[in-house]
Length: 282
Image (cartoon, rainbow, N blue to C red):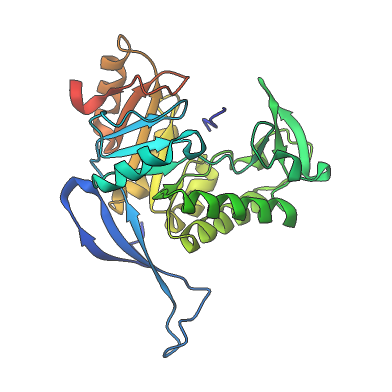
């Protein structure tokens, strides 16, 4: 498992319902399609986390149903379907991990990716290789993954590894390739009935944020990376914020994060759910 650390109004979003800290249901109009009635576009109702949602990241192992959280960030393929169903029965939600820019050799569909679409190994992650995001075969397989996550009940997907233009992929990918792929992913996620989250570096975020319902900021306190998510805050779209650390480091991290307008979480690199929520100690 690897995690890339890498002011308009609401635009096409219209609020359908809101329930306190539990999140917002929004209606996204698909500009590429038509409903067949008066030329209007079809609409999809999506769950979007509240700006102050109590959440937890648990990407390794099974979710802890007893955890006091309204939203979980999970690897859905590692979860028991009964646990996922129970979360929804309790009115809780989960967004799901998807490495969209890298090939992982442990995934069930790994052998379906053509060798020609696989680039260089990722540094420190020899079981992963960069993907040629221009490839029709890659996009077809990613669409199938997105649809599978939708069938597993995921409420949203923040696709990772989008900065393919900035990496030594061996594939000659450009920033335009990265932007086109990210927008395509957002469209596919919306079509599958889920909200799309954006975790990307500044040169992508400033172009892409209108297409995404929430941000996922990982390790942004190092340097000036947190500033890239300001458009989400200004548009009242949530930013889920993760910094790596332990209980001893959490007070200092949370103090730095306090003024951002994000919802910060301090967790270990294993993403095992042993996290400190800044809201609980500030």
